[in-house]
Length: 219
Ligand SMILES: Nc1nc2[nH]cc(C(=O)O)c2c(=O)[nH]1
Ligand code: SF4
Ligand SMILES: [Mg+2]
Image 1 (cartoon, helix red, strand yellow):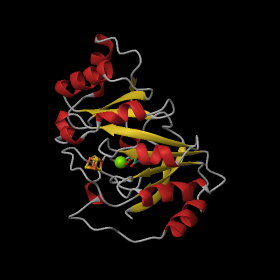
Image 2 (cartoon, rainbow, N blue to C red):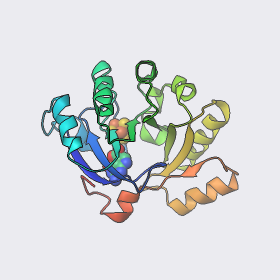
Image 3 (cartoon, helix red, strand yellow):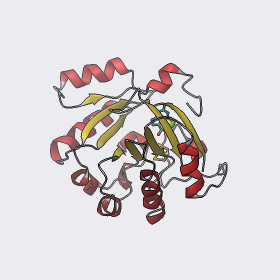
Image 4 (spheres, helix red, strand yellow):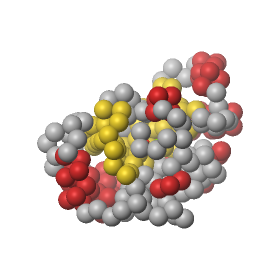
């Protein structure tokens, strides 16, 4: 485990809703612009919890939304699925969204978990991340209407690659374009979206970086 905290969701369609974040330790990627480098080695996990303890802690908050994140929360296969199922046992929750990185095959999770409360927010890595060769394009077609497909855009090259992928690979998920905080001014990204007529793409600003210090943890 890295941390469990309650704040408002900063991203995606549920941005602004009070949400409990459950951040698991470990990631199979090393993105250049990663903002959670404390969630994988050489850093160490902050603490260890059983699934029962995680559920108890989540129960202690009042938010009806939960975000399971990392790191990469689906790194642990059956165990990740079991944690999602355990969270589904909390009656209060109406939405459990999972921030996954595009390098984990969703098949296992989609075949095993059928609740409409569970949604995947896939962060598909573009060239600037340095990890685009690890992406599983086969996930695009597996995402459903309630899922989100987020592209973190750091440069013009990233923008055109995201645009090309959306044109060529069918998906039911909602596409989101999110500017890299340090290298892509949001105004420039909006200009590009309008210039290319991307009327089905939603701009995704990281609210938590606007509300708090962009380097702050646990917000
Ligand atoms: N407020 C807030 N919203 C977020 N949405 C996704 C986050 C993440 O780190 O995965 C995150 C986060 O760390 N904080
Ligand atoms: S997948 Fe996410 S947590 Fe892992 S290195 Fe990339 S940005 Fe960081
Ligand atoms: Mg974050």
